[in-house]
Length: 322
Image (cartoon, rainbow, N blue to C red; front, side, top):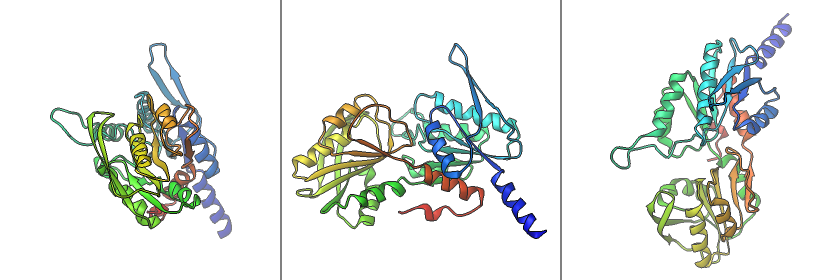
C-alpha cells in the first residue's frame, strides 16, 4: 500500500509541470525538454495580416506549474509573445507561471545615465509582473541589480557554468583574462581567480552608443594567450578593437567569450576580419549568420536542472561554478 502511494506521488510530481516555448527560442526549449525527459507543450500562435498575434494553449494546463521559455531579444514581438503566453496561462488557471528568459532584453537600460531617459529593464520587469508571472529564471543579466526590479523570485544563472569548463578544456598556457571595459572587470576578475591567472583591463571611451572612440590596455599581454570576457557582444566594435590592440601588444593568441550572442549589424564581418582566434557564446540567442570564428555552447542542461530543482523545491546555488 505504501509503495503504491510513493509511486503515485512520483507520477504526480512528473505530471505537475509543463514546458512551453515562444517562437524565438523553440530550439532551446526542445533541448531543455530533451534534458528533462518531457514533451514540449502544444502552443498555438495565430498571426493576423496586420502583424498582431494571439496565443492559445492547445492542451489543459489547469493546476499545472508552467515554464515558458522565451528570450526577449529584439524585435519586441518576442517580449509581447511572452507577455501573452503569461496572460493566457493565468486565464487558463495554471498553478504557477515561471518565465524562463535565457537572454533578458532591454537590460542595458538599467539606470538613468543622463536626464530624461527611460529605464527599460524596470519597465519590462513591471510588465512581466502585471501579466502574472510568479518566478523568473534568467542568465547573466547585464547588471545584477536588475534582480531587484522584480517583486517575484528571480533565479539568476551564470554562463560561466558552461564557458569555464570549455576554457579549461583548451589547456592554454600563459593564460590571461581580459575585460573589454572597466564595467566588466568584476566578471573578468571572477574568471581570473577561478582559473588562477592574471587580469588585464581595457579602458575605453565612447563617441556614442556602439562607437568606441579610444581604448588603452592596462596590463601585460606580451607572449600571453588572452581570453576576453564579456556579458554580450552586439556590434562587436569593442571586442574586436580590444583583440586587435592586444595582438599588436604582443599577445600570442586572443580569444573572446560572452554569454549572449547579440551579433547585430556588422558584427560577424568584424569578428571574421579581427585578430580573434574564436569567439564563444551560449545559445541563449539563436545565431544564423555565417562566421567560422563563432562557437556556441548550449545552456539547455543548465536550465533544465534549474527547472527540475524549482519543481522539487531544491537549492540551485550549487549550480554556480563561480
